[in-house]
Length: 424
Image (cartoon, rainbow, N blue to C red; front, side, top):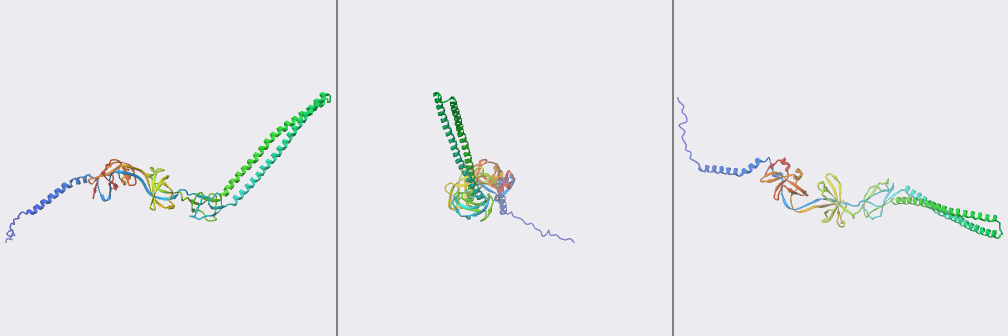
């Protein structure tokens, strides 16, 4: 018995062509082909790039031409240009005459150092000076007395010589008249010769002793004057025990307690001259080399703006920064206080018609030797040459032109690739 299949049940079905479907499929194919043609350049650039980075991870800037201003803007701190510190010139117990914050005048006594040892030494040296003065005056009296005796001896010698001359003349006349002998004439001649010798010695003694007396007086005088200098120096030291303010200002910090015993050269207190305030700012080392004394700047705060001039630049670099000071071009504002914070701006350079671009990390990362120029979604590594830099801009000397768009930040993601695709 044979088993029947289903062939008898099958029948041929005629499929009619669907034009609508064909039209849809054809349109889709044409659209895909057009899209491929439109995306072909971008796809080609994408495959030519070494990497692809999202634009959200990058920062861009356009090269512009215009005014270029190099300045330094920073926060400054008001400091006292003159802030002397007082020291103890001699050891002893200190009595303070003022308190921190007190207003003081120049020459006002701020503290007194009690030093009995120094005062006693001054009294001893003063007594020695008085004794030397008496000795000096006594030498003058003795010299006058000695000169008087020498002058008296000289005058007597002159009289004796004159008497001897008269006696000789008389004896000679008497001898000529026969009233005197030759012996008497010879005796008169001897007396005259003796008187002349005595006069010569008296004259010599008068001159020599006068010089000796003058030298003795001068010696006493110099010794006394030298002692007076010792006394003056000690008197100065005693006067310095009264510590006086060298300026008009305000008492700053007290370094000792009341009635404290200090050693020589110990710090006592400081005085702040509020009439000579300056503003101190910290400048990055890269800008410090362009900073010069006398440059103009602006100091702003409390709703006011004051002109300033750079007055000092520290030669030391600390943590990559250099300390600089600005003084006020006019009078120091009265409302400022020490350690008050102010905004400071120093103008370094200003030029027109300069090609610049916004400053970014690309300057530090590449050293200003190249930048990534963006065109049609591709960032191309392009050699450039940069010039001066400011806080927000950098000068372009070569490699870029006005209107060029470059990547200024995030280029570390490029890994120094020559071409990088930038995706949205």
